[in-house]
Amino acid sequence: MSKVQIFIGSVYGGAEQVGELVGEELRKLGHDVSLNTYARAEDLARDPDEIILLCHSNTGSGELPDNIQPLYLHLTRDYPRIAGRRYGVINLADSSYMSFNEGGKALDAAFADLGAIRVGEPLVIDACSGDDPATLARDWVNEWARLI
Image (cartoon, rainbow, N blue to C red):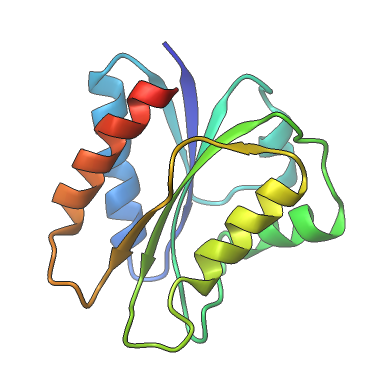
């Protein structure tokens, strides 16, 4: 089975709850999972075979939460060697804002620009949809896990 490190970016705890739930589901499927709520540059390099799962919310005008912003800045300023690294994206957003999903798109693009390979399509959980985030995350991660 795979090693997965979940980078969590959360302000009010919603993305952290989803990250924990997804981690539990992946463990049930036999994967080795670690949660990281304060991702740093060295966390990208700790194991090149480890798959990174980004699980974060958007804030303000589509920005990333403070606890994942340093990772984004590292990607866009220092250009770490992550070509070929596999990753996935879960983004919690709110379509009532003009900047819907902008933080998720920016972080996804930063990984892709450096040659990382996204596994599957991103899960975008819209706060305005009325859907249960836990149900959406469980369904998505079970499909995603088949791809890793």
